[in-house]
Amino acid sequence: MSYSIPFNKPFIIGKELYYIAQSVLNGQISGDGPYTKLCQQLLENTFAIQRVLLTTSCTSALEMAAILCNIQPGDEVILPSYTFVSTANAFYLRGAKLVFVDIRPDTLNLDENLIEPAITTRTKAIVPVHYAGVGCEMESINSIARKHGLFVIEDAAQGVNAKYKDSFLGTLGNLGTYSFHETKNFICGEGGALVINNKEFIERAEIIREKGTNRSKFFRGQVDKYTWVDMGSSYVPSDILAAFLYGQLENMEKINRQRKFIYKTYYELLLPLAEHGLLRLPVIPEGCDSNYHMFYLLLKDHDTRMSLIEHLKKQGILAVFHYVPLHTSPIGQTMGYSDGMLPVTEYISERLLRLPFYFELQEMDIRTVVSEIFCFFNIEFLTD
Ligand SMILES: *Cc1c(COP(=O)(O)O)cnc(C)c1O
Image 1 (tube, helix red, strand yellow):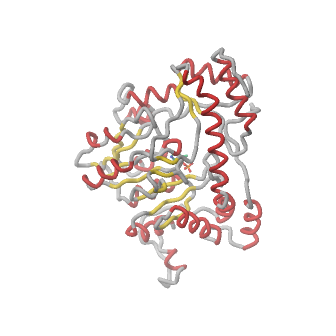
Image 2: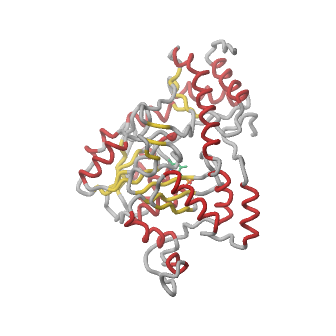
Image 3: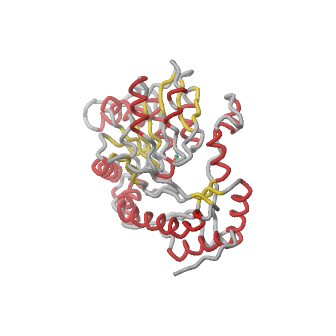
C-alpha cells in the first residue's frame, strides 16, 4: 500500500549525487577513500571527537564496541529493553548476560536510578540509548560507571548532532555509535560510525574494522606488510556511501532546522489535545538539545493507539508503533524474562505512536495529520 503521507522518506539535500559520481570516477569505491576521510574529519571537528571510524551500520559499530571492551561469555551488560535489537545483539553475540533495566517515563531513556541496583561483580558495561535524540542522564550514568569501573557505550544511533549539557551525544561515554540508516536524521541508506573517546581504543578499533588485520597501518606505511593480528570483521563501508553521506553532513544544520520546525509544529498543534488529557507529548528535559529525531504520542491505552493507527491509515497516513520490548521477545524469554518485569517499558511500548517525520514533510502535511488526530477524538481542529 502506498500512503499520501508516508512514515519516512529518504531525501537528498545537497551534492550527494555529484559526490557519488566523483567517487566512482575517482576509481576507488571500496572503503576508506577520500569521502570516508572527509566524513570522519567533519564529524571529528564538528562534535569534538577524538577519532571517528565510519562503519557499515550502527549495528556494526555496536559489535565493534563489544569486542573493544573485551566482553566475554558470562559478563553482564546493562541496557534498556526498550530499544532496537542491535543494542542487545552486539553483546549477545559475545556471550554476555543481558541485564535489562527499565526506562524513565518522561524521556523513555534508561532510568539512571535503576542502574546501581542491577550491578553485580560480573557487570562490565552500561549501554545507554538516547531515545528520539534526547540525551540520557549521562552525568549520573558516568559517575556510576566510574565508581564501579564499568565501560559506557552510548547507542547514539538516533542522537547524531544532539547534545547533553554542551557535549554532543556519542562523546560522553568511552565509545559511542551512530546510525546513518535511511530512517535516521542524516542518511546514506545503510551506514554508521564508531565514536572513540579514549585513545587506547584507536589502534585496535582500526584492526577489528579491517577484518582483524593491520591493513590501516600498512596503508600509512607503518608496517611493510599486513597480516592477521586480532579478531575482526568487515565493518568498512564503500566510499560510494560515504560520498552520499558527505553531501548530507555538509547540510547538518539545515536538516536540523527543518526537523526542529516539524517537531515544533506538531507540538504546538497537538498541545490542545494534551491539555484535554487525551494524549501525552514528548518531553525534552532542561540541559538536552534534541536533534528532533522523532515525534511520538502516548495514548491512553493499547486499543486507542491501534484504532488511531487504523484511522490514519484510512486517510493515507502511515503512523507506526515502536519497540516491542526485548525482554518479552522470544529470545528475551529464553533468558528468563517475562511480562510484568519492566512495567514502564511495557506500559510505554503499548501506547506509543510515531507520527510521519522526514525532511521533506510539508507544513500542510503536518496539518493534515494533526487534523485527522483531532477528528479521531471528535474535537474540532481550528486552523488559523
Ligand atoms: C537505528 C538504530 C540502530 C541500528 O542502526 P543501523 O545503522 O540500522 O544498524 C541501533 N540502535 C538504535 C537505538 C537505533 O535506533
